[in-house]
Length: 234
Image (tube, rainbow, N blue to C red):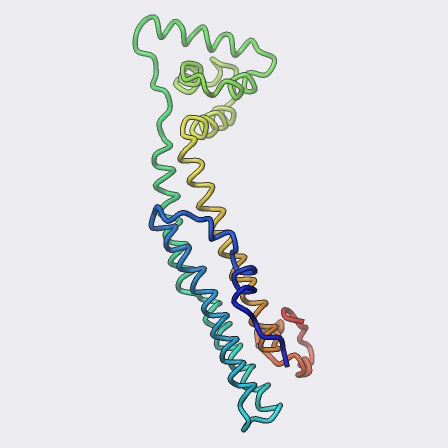
């Protein structure tokens, strides 16, 4: 009989870092709920398999067949997992919100003194061996960034692509909190995806099944149909 899955193992293998996720926003709540739902699904699979294995009316072949069916149902649910989709949607909305708050760059100079300073800054930058490197090393200087971004690129020695790079980097430098929030949300979504993959492996092992190249789920003892390669779970 395959090894039963403990609660400790489920928590250790499916998004263990989620215990450190905050609950400060909707997308974090959705991510946590998705992790909980994955863990519950694996626990239910294990409980159903245990009940099947303890059924005195079933033969070994009958137990194997029921385990395959348990695995099929769970893997089908996991392949289009509603809590995961909900979390992905929430993270997408959060990322869009973070990015919408990162559009501000220093405004163009307005006074005569500011215009003169902006001109001097561009001239100084253009005289550097690497104008773009100079600007990128001074992104915390709003006057320099504004002078470069609010004028044609050739005035500061930058090509069109160089301006785009400076603009993107400036957004990050000027909005560190939004960048941090976006990164954390995107990384958490990756953790969730890995949790789904871990759950799939656990379900395959517990139900002694595999997924062949034709996407059919079969008992690991069942011969591979002619012309079809084994894919996952062996």
